[in-house]
Length: 242
Image (tube, rainbow, N blue to C red):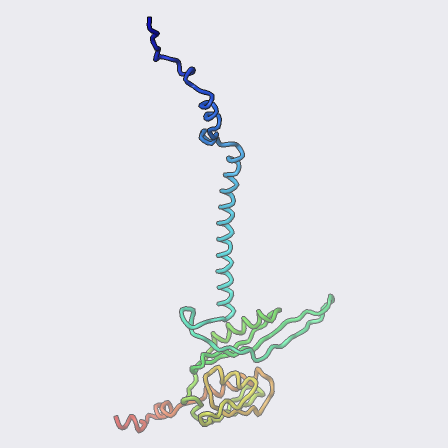
C-alpha cells in the first residue's frame, strides 16, 4: 500500500528557522509613527517663534520708516521725488549759559543759509537746548523764507550796497573766472544763491546775523536791464528789432 502525501500541511510547519531570523531582522521603522507629547509641545514653540520673527521684522520696518522720516526732516534732501537739491551752510552757532541754583544751563542758537544755486536763497534762525535741534529749526526756517534774486550769467547785474542794522555790505560784479572774493556770512549767501564771480566788502558791523541780512537786502535790490526798461516803459534793442 503506497503512502499518500498530504498537501494541506499547516503554515506553522512550513516556517523554517531561517525565515524566523529574517522576520526578526526587519526594521521597526515600518511601523506607523506615533506622535509623542514632546513633538506636540515643540509645534506651538515653532509657531510662536514664527510670530515673534514676524513681529521683529515689522518693528524693524517701522524703525526704518522713522529713520527715513527723520533724515528728511533734518534737511537731507536729494534731487528727485523728495524735492529739489538745496545747498545749506551753518554760518554761526552761539552758546548761551544761564546760571541757576544747580549750576549752568546751556542753550544754543544757529544761523543757517539755504539756497538752490539757481537764484533762490534764504536764511533761518533757530534756538534749542541741543545743537542738532537748533540747526534743524534754522534749516526749516531758511527753506520757508527764500527770495528770488536777479543774476546775469555767473555774476550780479550791477554794483549794490545793502544795509541792515549795523551791517553794511558792498557787492560788485566781476568778470568770469574771478571767483567769490568774500568771506564769512557774505560768502555763504552768494554761494547758496548761485553766484560764482563777485567782489564783496563788509564795511560795517562784524555781527554775522547783521552781515547775512545786509547781504540779502543787497541781493533783493538787484535788477536786470530788461526789468529796468520794463519799469520805465521802454524797449531794449532786441525788442525794437522785433
